[in-house]
Length: 112
Length: 113
Image (cartoon, rainbow over all chains, first blue to last red; front, side):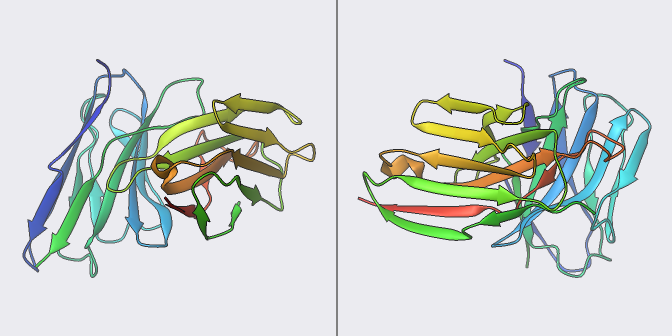
C-alpha cells in the first residue's frame, strides 16, 4: 500500500532539546510539505521541498530545520530556538501534475 | 499573499440536519479542494473541483466551484455522528509560482446524536 508514514505518533521533549520528526513516503511524489497545526489556527506551512536536495521556507520556518537527501524522506527538526513547539505536526506530499496533497497521520509533540 | 476565508468557524448541529460551509477569496483560484480531518489524524481529500461552475458529489457531500472562481461551498446532507471533524477548503492560485495550496482555517463540525 502506498502512503505516508509519520513517526512517532506522540513525542515528548524536554525544553532546550532538539527533536526530529520523521516523514517517509512510498508514493514517488516529488513535493513534500511540513505543516504545524494549533487548536483553532488551521494549517501553517513550515517548510516545503519540490525536489531532492532543495527546500524552501514556509510562513513559520523560524526554529525549524529540514533536509531532503532522498525523495522518500523529509525529516523535520524542531530546534531549541522554537519558543513554542508544542503542536500537532503534519507532513504532506504532492504528485507531479496534481494539486491535491496526501497527508500523513501526524505527530503530536509536547514539550515537558 | 492569497488568503481563503472559510466560514463558519464552527458548527453545532443535530444528527440528520444538513450542513453548509463556504470559502471565499478576493482573488481567483483555478482549483478548489475540500478536506476532512478526523480528531488526531491528518486531513483526507473529500472532493476536488477543477472548473468554474463545477458541481461534484461524493455520497452525502456536494461541493461547487463558484462561477466567479473566487468561492466554493461544501454541503453535507443528513449528517451523522461520524461527520464530526474539521473541514478545510484549499485552493491553487494560478499565479502562485508553485504548486503550493492555500488553506482556509477550517470549519469545526460537531454533530449531536
